[in-house]
Length: 127
Image (cartoon, rainbow, N blue to C red; front, side):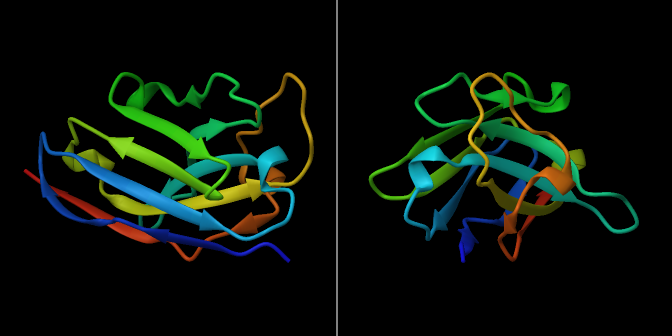
């Protein structure tokens, strides 16, 4: 079973930065597609960013392009979400997720496609 543990959330002023980390257990982490999602009360969990194995170009939802960067360190079994120029609308619980399927040219963006989830970390951006 794969376990994911996020850290790095917190309170930050608008325009500030935070970096989220997600440590992943699992023998074949290097092949997992890793995704970041976020959720606010009363809304569905939404895709934020994803990165496939092998150094593939990450994918971002439009609202975070140019501000967020996701990366991974396969040796450490960690994935990161660097968030810059944060806005109040970025306030949410952020989750990392792992999809254990092996894709060549596809990056999953829906909740149901991911197999394992972390517990979430709260990010609050004040105006």
